[in-house]
Length: 281
Ligand code: NAD
Image (cartoon, rainbow, N blue to C red):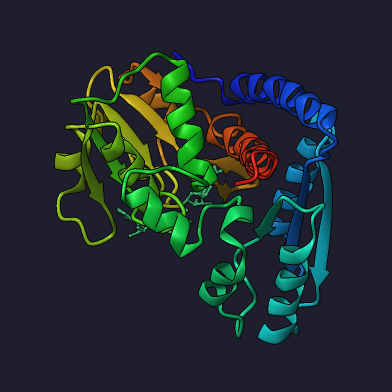
């Protein structure tokens, strides 16, 4: 089975439209502000996708562009201004930042209740303690897809390849919160295949095209390929899709899998933030 992330994202968007209407009825127009520093083409594309999604569902969105040679003080000032604006419910700082800027300090400067990427230490800490407020969008999209597929993580063997702060670590916490048995592998893991073969749910987020081959996958596994790599002008994931799809029980394609789910979760998080304000949280 192919996990159609695009179709699932469309469902999230339909739901988002209804949530926007409910907020409008209370006089609140949900707003997302993104900050883009420099002109990294991949970042520009991600920003465009997020704004287009906002537009489709009726979330007001704007981008603050800062030139690549901006200093940390410029970035913190931009964040501060957005923190204090009532019409901005979600703030998203597009990573990576140009050299010389400190992403950790910048993420920490975002008001935790507007942190739609879920990278603020308060939100990460809260996730680790089992309370999921605003959580990173890619792991949230994967959990959403599992729920939509009716797959209960409790007692399942889940294997994650990649231990980044953006994907692997928060996803491990979210899976533990749902009582899965979680293994996290990374570049220093010995004999990767011996781990990946255990996974009833296997998530690969390494940024290495073709890293996971058919013989590394348990028969019937649910496979999420997070990787986005450009090879010979084509976008491919980290999983050898053609071979693995015959072993896996279900698999996400690249493109059209985890990517659209991630974008749809930005909408859902912005609405969570706006609804939090509506509740006076
Ligand atoms: P990262 O570079 O921060 O982390 C990569 C992780 O993979 C690290 O834990 C590293 O140890 C591990 N790794 C690298 N090579 C490995 C190997 N040979 N064997 C085992 N582990 C290995 O990357 P990231 O930000 O987590 O992104 C990973 C990939 O996912 C990239 O291709 C990125 O573009 C993509 N991504 C996609 C989405 C999406 O929405 N689809 C979102 C975020 C990231």
